[in-house]
Image (tube, rainbow, N blue to C red; front, side, top):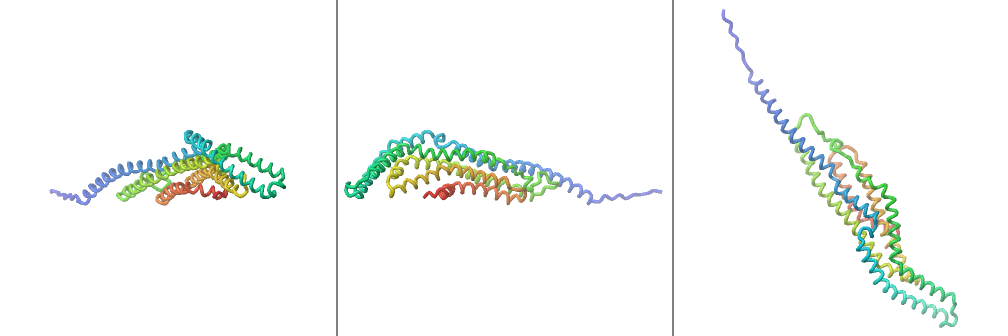
Length: 313
């Protein structure tokens, strides 16, 4: 008796095996792409603020060093202008104001008939003091600058490392470094983050350049104002004209402390970065770039802040 067996192989099992094999191959390819893209995105995030932090560190060192250490040639040039150009101009103003004071004294003393010796001595003392102040006016306003630099140095210990404390990673932002299953959508999403970081890096680099340029403009403005110090100080002899010298003094104090407020702004900026929490990538990225642009914008408002505090106009 012959027994016959009919063995049927289901075509579905073969298709399923092929499908699993293809899926494994595709997943292997996606993993390679995803791992490379993830590593590139991670480095972009870590280096996002490198250029800005470098400019902030450079600006901090320059502010603490002062205008003379920034550019000794420019400093010496402005000092020579003050001593050789502005002091002779101030001497002319002092002479005019002294003559004006003598005329007033003569008028008030009934054509010198009732002149009081103490009034004449007071005019002569104001004349002598005004000459001395004008002679050393550049050194006086640089002493204001030294006071601002001293305040900046004391503040520098609080701001030195605050900017560099940014340690947010992709894992903190909710991006899995090795998901169980990788899809085209996941790769495209990570690629989009990479493009956003590239655009943000360019923007942050521009912000860093603006921070450095703002510090240079501050030094130039400070030296320009300091070089003309003898002219406004020559007006202190007269009550009506002395307001010019007082306004100039307040302006120089405001300029001298702009560096202090810049360092204070760096400290606030570092505190904002350090306070970022793990969460949505897009939201944190917008916050990061916004902090950079906010720092650049506020750097150009420091002058107004300092001027308002010292009532300089």
